[in-house]
Length: 177
Image 1 (cartoon, rainbow, N blue to C red):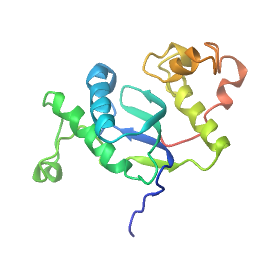
Image 2 (cartoon, rainbow, N blue to C red; image 1 turned 90 degrees about the horizontal axis):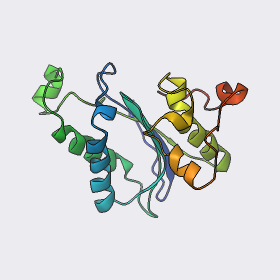
Image 3 (cartoon, rainbow, N blue to C red; image 1 turned 30 degrees about the horizontal axis):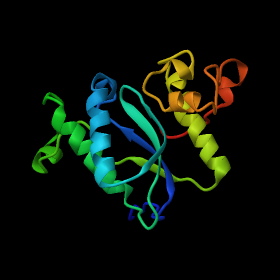
Image 4 (cartoon, rainbow, N blue to C red; image 1 turned 180 degrees about the vertical axis):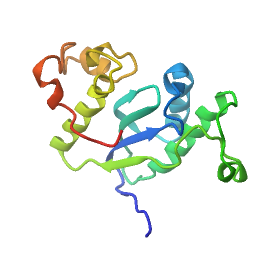
């Protein structure tokens, strides 16, 4: 069976990217290095960040690619590689990875979903922003510092009390991660 990824130039995509060792907190411990890796890749391979949340061991992002460009895989490879180069050695590296000269920081694959319409986009943005609450990292989505929710709050799109109360459990249904 051959694995096929969506390939729509100018498309909008939801991603889940995981560390190989989900017990580590490298992403938030080294958030400045991750941000720098994203900035560096974004300068060379443009994309718009619609939403993003970074948790200790995984992250979710929604990107829109430029017209006639569908190559999100290269962007993720470059982000992962740039981040990995800044992290001191110390992870367990299996024989397969050693043979390929790879680090053991990231899961090799990532989950992607091509956004189909405005409703799909809204559901995925909600999922991104509620994720720290879902995983017990924050009581309110706005309490988590590593999230694009703060941009949405600054723009007035949502309030700091978004998803608080009874409807919080309904927001951000099951996704991968």
